[in-house]
Image (cartoon, rainbow, N blue to C red; front, top):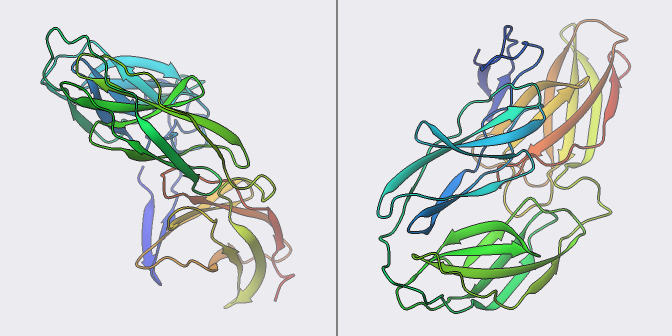
Length: 325
């Protein structure tokens, strides 16, 4: 069932509407299945492979695995901790369409992500020469959860098709061969990382790794990554009803935060999507809390970060109706 939406004071309030019944693909109806993964991308890795990446699925359900589809056919399945996969054995010089779905521990399957497309290049016959290693890798921290990387283009006798970014020896990111810079997200605050980059051509020849770059993300002592700070919650009474007034400072991230989720007593109470210019210094929001005095509520919030992932929760505040101003 779709949520109801109200537009007022430049904010889009998304009010959840309860649903009942079993989830898709079975499930006992005891909770909602995972949401659709966001931020899905697809880039040709070679003439016969495509890299598919995504952000974590939305919702409260714990994801046990992700399923990757080419058209309507499931082609790969990976653990819930994975955020990327190489789909191999594809036809060269062909356009391919991919989606990703999340499945929780109870077997409930979430909806498909938006479709993404990638076209594999023509095969390069008898090509056994790998590209040169990408040089001059540079980087800087972009807040507590991301880094920006750039490098000098590799050279290949028939052209570079893609670049793969490694954290230690693990593939964590990829971009097309015409890019020499990227942002890696989903990192931990206050953590030191080592990155390298390798180039790949259409014949799937992989270059040696370029020189490493070592970076430390910001944070560590400032609370959960990407969490709003200075969170306050007070009660007020007007027109015979009680309201809760919230205010907070947006998380310090690389970009502008335009969406927040408010949780009341452990459940989603409302979502705020700012229209026009989103506040950058302090955000305020007021919502209805009923007509009964002496009711104590727990409130906390979190932000949808510019990379499409949820940040950490703010500190939790307690408000009792009739005890405020």
